[in-house]
Image (tube, rainbow, N blue to C red; front, side, top):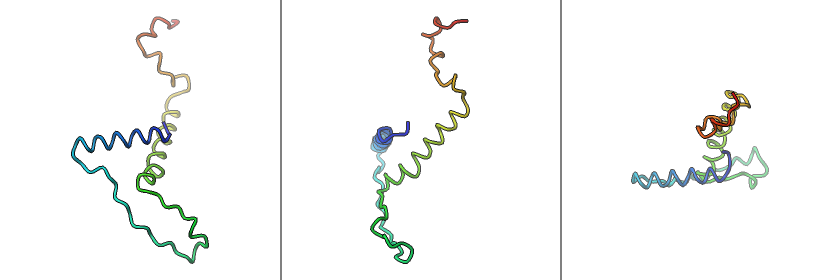
Length: 95
């Protein structure tokens, strides 16, 4: 769930939905902020991220991590495989 591939898939689906609804799917670039030279001597090491990259790091990955943690807490390990709910598997159940 938490990978660059799923992120790229989610972004492409969101962009296609935006195009279907005639909405602008591009995120505006923010102007670069000046870094205070007093607090840090290595100003060149400051990370500058694009809006989509910042959204992935600050929103998407934390949301996916929280979702996985909540699911693991809510459902015991023996219930994490939901294959037993598939009607095809009913014959293989030992009752």
